[in-house]
Structures are given as structure tokens and as C-alpha cells.
Length: 76
Image 1 (tube, rainbow, N blue to C red):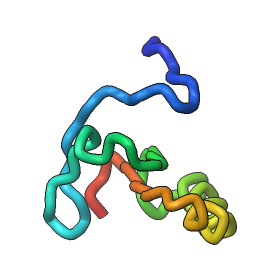
Image 2: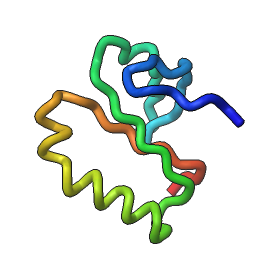
Image 3: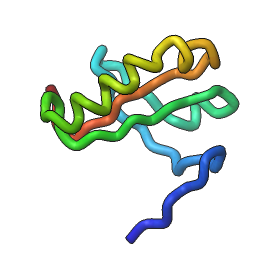
Image 4: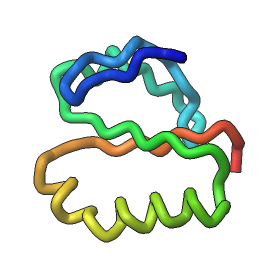
């Protein structure tokens, strides 16, 4: 099992294609506050609950200046 990262620990670098078609590389965001929200499938009940929780706390997240990225294995 992969080792879990503690909050504040830099994540390994990766590049993924965003919903807008542009690539996003994690290392390009170093020094910025970033929230990575991993979820298995768009539109599944558990994932919807997770995204609802982010929405409910959005003002608090936004007030920190953090950028939020939702990462899923599907391509909805």
C-alpha cells in the first residue's frame, strides 16, 4: 500500500489534462495552496456527497486562496 502523505507534505509531481483541455502540472503550482480532491467516478452517490461537502465549505476554502482540483479516473 502506498504511503499516505501528511498535510503540508509536497505531493509527487504529475501532469493531467484539465476539463478545459489544458494540461495542469502540479509542480507549476508549488508555493501556492492547492487542494486535490480525488474521487473514483463522476456522478456516483459517494462522490457527489464529497463534492457537496466541498461546495458547502467553498467560502472557507476560497478565503485561503487555495486552488481546488477534482481528479477522477473517468472523463465525464
